[in-house]
Structure formats: structure tokens, C-alpha cells
Amino acid sequence: MTSCSRDVSCRKERTIKQRILTAAIALPLLIVLVAFANPLIFSLFLAVVLFLALLEFNRMGLAADHSIEQWVAAAGGALSVPLLYFQQETLLLPFFAGTILLLGVLFLFRLPEIKEIQQRLGWLCLGLFYLPFLLGHLYLIRILPEGRAWIFLTLLVIMICDTFAYFVGSNFGKRKLYPAVSPNKSVEGGLGGLVGSVLVVVLAGVTFLPQIGIFDGIVVGLLLGTIGQLGDLFESLLKRACGVKDSGSLIPGHGGLLDRLDSLLFAFPVVYCLAKYGYGG
Image (cartoon, rainbow, N blue to C red; front, side, top):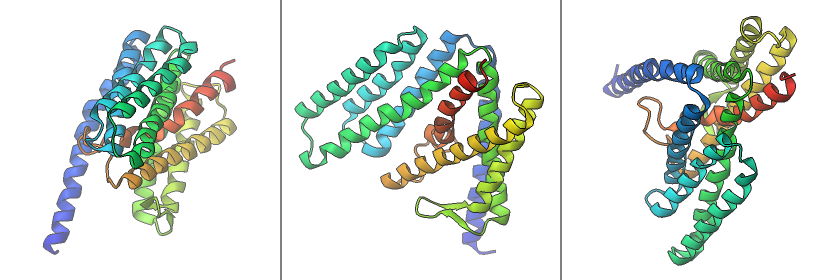
């Protein structure tokens, strides 16, 4: 084995160990939070996660430029969660409008390179819609009668989908899924992820969500597995546009928050609709 091969193998081994250690610490804490935290504590946790994710998103696109605007956008997005907690959904639209107006004024009087304003301001506005509006559905799921069960289902589906996709793709992957956006993903890995997703939903129907029958479990599993992988690809598209490998370095062995949230961001709105309108009656 060459020194280069040994170095690559060592880096992979360190990364796997970091991932296992991080998961061993973070997963039990997440389970306890979802299972036992009241809506107030859960909303505070979600607001912190949203604030950190928005800062990460803003820095991914703007680096160290416009630091004040980055913090304003992150704070504005995070404060949407308290509005949900206090059931003030009608204030969300004027609140986000006010945040965008404030960002516009800051750009106007903290004049950057004029030809780059549309990209820089546009990136901050994209973050305000991409993260709060998608991640905010997690709180809406939480306050449903069976919200905890649906959150656990979503986490399990995405985790197993990623795991099946990784191992199937690593061992049997031959055809590239979407090389322009994510060169390492394969069609075989994607199909393996769908199989894992279906198995999880069918088992959930047998155990803690009995309203999901076998046929429904197959359909819901395929839906969530597909939408989760699309969320992963979309975040890969954003990272490739920004020229970065990871969205950040907050989570050892996993990259940034967005690298863990990417699939979930697309899944939460779909799960909310299923839980409230499809199986809520």
C-alpha cells in the first residue's frame, strides 16, 4: 500500500470514528429532547438550531463579507420560531418583509461592490426562505397530537435511507446518479436508500404508527426516501455553487449543520402534510 493510500485510509478511519462518537453523544440527547421537552423548550432549541444554521448558510455564500447583514438575517430567521410558539402565524409575512427591508437598507448605506449586490442580498434572502420556512415545519409537527411519533419516523427514515444508500452505493454503485451536482452518489445507492426508507415506514406502521398500513407504508416510504434524497442533492448544489466541500465544521466527522439537515429540510413539510391532513383524522 502506498503512503497516499495509507493516508486516505487513515483519514477515512478517523472520520468514521468521529461520526460514531458524535452520533453516540448527539443521538440520545436528540431522542430525549423530542420525547420529553415541552413545546417551549423545543421551540427554544429549534430557534438556536435555526440561528446557527442560518449563520452557516450565510457564511457559506458570503464568507466574511457583510457580517452585520449575516447576523441580522440569521436573527430574523430564528425569531420566526417564537412567532409559531405564540401562535402568531399571521405576523410571519410582515416580520419577514421587515427583515428584508432592513437588509435592503443596510446594503444601501453599507455600499458594497454594486455589481455584486443582487447575488449577495439574494443569497441572504434565499436563506430566509430556505431554512425558516422548511425547518419551521418541525415545530408544527411537534405540536400535533402524534407529533413526536412522526418526528421519530422522519429521523429514522432519513437516517436509514442515508445508511442504505451509502453501503449499497459503496459496494454495488456503478452508474452515477447526478455527477454534475454530487459525483459520489450512484443510482444503485439511491435505490438502496429507497428500500431502507420503505422498510422503516412499514415497520413504523406495525409498531408505533398503526394508521399506516402496508400499502401506505410502501408509498410513504418511497415518497420520503425520494424527497429526502432530493434535499441532499439540493444542498450539494448550493455547496458546489459556493465551491465548498462541507457547509461548515460545527459537527465533528459530519461537517456542518446543513450537512445533517439537508434531507430533513425537504422532508419536514411533507411529513407535516401527511401527519395533519393524510393521517390526522
